[in-house]
Each structure stands twice: as C-alpha cells, then as structure tokens.
Image 1 (tube, rainbow over the protein chains, first blue to last red):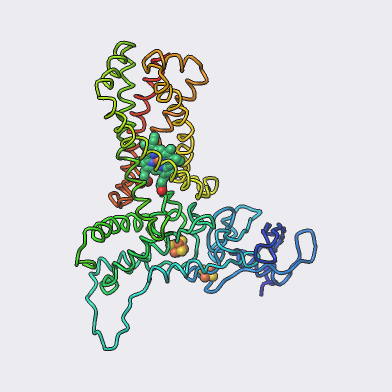
Image 2 (tube, rainbow over the protein chains, first blue to last red):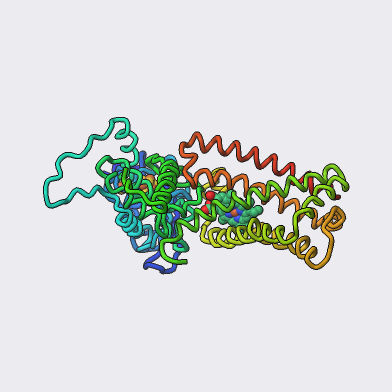
Length: 259
Length: 204
Ligand code: HEM
Ligand code: SF4
Ligand code: FES
C-alpha cells in the first residue's frame, strides 16, 4: 500500500541514537519517501523496514516505543524539534525539516528513542494514586460526586503518564529527586474523588515528603507542554494550599485529618 | 538533612524570603532613598540608627538579617544548582522568571557579601558609615555599575519572589489570579528599582 503513493518528495530526519543505556550518542540522518498525512511514527516505520542512512550506509533499525497510535497511551513521547511530544500525533506537514528526533533525556534512555519511565510509575505508587476499596466486607456505594466537580476532575484524569511534563520541568532530572508535575496532579484528582478523599491525608503526607510538592519552582513549563491540556500548575497551587492547611493540622493536632 | 524534612525547610526558605529578608530590603532601600534629598538628609536619617542601643542593634542585625539571610541564601544556592535550565526550549515569561530568580539569587550572594564587607565590616573595623563612605565607593564607575546590577537583582528577586510565595503557600491558584499577581509584582519590581537606583546614583 505504501509503495502505491509515490510523491517524489522526501522527509529529512536527524535522529539522536544510542545503542545501550548510558552508551555513546551519535546522530544519523535519514531521508524517507514523503506521503500525505504522514506522522513521525510512519517515518520511523519506514526506517525500520529500510535501515539505511541518507548517505546510503546500512545501519540498525531505530528503536522507539508506541502503542495506541492515537495519543492516549503516552508511550511514544520523544523530543521532536526541541519540543517533547507524542510522535504518533506529530504530523510531518506541521514540522520544519530536517525533523530532529531525540529521546526524553530526563529519563534513562534504554536505546535510541526508547526511554524508561519507571520513575513516574514509582511516583504514582508513592503518592497512592488510586482509590482503596478492598476490605473484608462489602463497603457499599460511595458518596456521589457532584457533576460539576466530575467535569473538571475528568480533565485531570486524562493524564497518560507520557512524561512530557517531566521532560519540560527544569527541576526534574537526575540531579534532583522531584517526583514531577504529573504525579502531583494525580494526588489532586484522587483527593477530589469523594471516596478517594477518605485517604487524602495519606496522599498529602506522601507529597509533603522528600522529593515532593515543595520542589516545584514554578517555571510553569509543564502546563505549557502537556498534550492533554491538564491544568498542572493550578493543581500544584491547589495542593500547596491543601499542604499548608495539613501542615498546621499536623503540628497543632486535629482529629479531623480527612474532612 | 533528616528524612522527610524537606517540605518544612522549603516552606521556611519561602517564608524567610519575605519575612524578614524581603521586609528588610524594602526598609533598607527606603532609608537609602533619603540620599535623594542630599547629604544632610541621608546622614540625618541613618543617624537615627545610632539612637538604637548598640547591643540591641547587634542582636537585631543577627536575628532579622544575617541568620535568615544566610539560611535563605545557602539553601537557595543548593536549589539553584539542582535546576536544569531550559529557556532555549521553553522561552516563556515564567520559565525566564524561574531562571532569573536563580541567577539573581546567585549574583546576590556575591553582591551582598561584598556589600557587607565594604560597609558593615569596615564599620566594625572603625570606619564611619555615612554619605561620604558611599560616595567614595560609587566614585568608581565599576562599583557604581556593580551596585546598580546588585540593586536590580535584589528588587527583581524580591518582586518575583513575592509571586512565588503566593503560589508556594497556595494563595494564588487560578491562572487568572497568577497572571494578575505577575502584573502586581512587576509593578513592585519597577517601583523598588526606581527607589533603589535613584538612591545609589544620588551618591555620585
Ligand atoms: C536580597 C535578599 C533576598 C531576598 C529579599 C529574597 C527573597 C526571596 C523570596 C521572597 C523568594 C520566594 C520564595 C518562594 O518561592 O516561595 C525567594 C526565592 C528564592 N531565593 Fe531568594 N531572596 C534573597 C536572596 C537570595 C539569595 C542570596 C539566594 C541565593 C542563591 C536566593 C535564592 C533563592 C531561590 C533559588 C529561590 C527560589 C525558590 C523556589 O522557587 O523554589 N535568594 N527569595
Ligand atoms: S500531565 Fe500531561 S504531560 Fe504530564 S504525563 Fe500526564 S499527560 Fe503527559
Ligand atoms: S502511541 Fe500512544 S500516545 Fe502515541
């Protein structure tokens, strides 16, 4: 099917590659036949089939992650022309060429464009980004969520752990232990949920620990970069207020830890 | 630093930036502004400080200025060096403000150390702090430039610091309130800068 459309045009790419974790990086140029409506992944798929550089040298196929191909799984994030974003929804027509592809270096690079986002998943565990409902008996229905609250909480729930906000944040790096914007916003989501709110002090305690909320330096890059338009900085400021209240409760003592 | 104390240290850092260090800066620049009225006005105003008993002044200096400033400054240097600046990739106003907050902070460590050496330490060694002392210092155009950059660093750092403080404590949450806080703090930056620079150039 691909061969069917021959536009005679090409797409030029520069890819920053590395063969092993912590290995040497190198740049390789590729020239891929252009087809209308191409995304970055379709160019990468072509390179996978024909791993030949622009100057005709045989090379290894470029490695990257992908899954849903419709910007909901977050797996395919990479730095495209300097901006972290999803390669499945990055359309070639909208990018200036040569298109420069780099891995999101804020994460450990596994190989080429493939990164290990474990630190995000570990952060979600650390902040208890779930609603605990398991018990020894049926707890019954939880409280109802007001519709208007559900509507904005839904926006927060769109997070796909893609890591773009982490790459954009100047305070997330191997130099610091900051858990980053995405897991923080998830705390706000689960603390908003009427059943989740029953454990909100535990989640606040987690983000008031080392590497937590207080590491945010308000560069506000996260909210500018998030492909899902999640109001990350509003979440962070709201959590700052919740943490202020919690701090006083912790110190002066209160038997109302969760309401 | 003991485990899980970071939150409290950070909040303390944020608070000390305003109270007392920020308040002191406003007071300090205001007092210096009397120099605009000439040598006598300045010497008269600063002479008021001599009325405070010496021992009390010393205690106040340490409690209101040196200890909080040193904590804020040294912890600030640590914070500044854990950042990986990326204004070339994200050149928004906020990201630049983030970077400038750290750059001005680091410059202020150098500036304040030098400023204390030139004034407070000379006083302890017997020199008299008055209009002439400052006039001699800024007679050198290099020193005048150094002081102006130092003053502008301090006023930006405080003004933008107020913006950060409002977010750090959860006072401004909505994008709109944060935007308005940006305008208000930049007006504060402009006013403090005019006050500070007008004072230093009136020693020339
Ligand atoms: C003239 C003296 C100073 C004043 C009035 C001042 C004031 C402030 C204020 C009000 C903040 C905002 C706190 C917040 O974000 O909640 C701040 C933040 C900061 N200050 Fe200072 N400061 C001074 C000196 C310094 C020095 C010498 C350094 C050393 C590098 C420094 C480094 C920082 C840093 C890195 C931040 C950002 C913290 C963050 O956003 O997480 N400051 N300062
Ligand atoms: S908050 Fe946005 S940018 Fe960050 S991980 Fe979630 S979807 Fe990606
Ligand atoms: S492949 Fe799922 S977001 Fe791109």
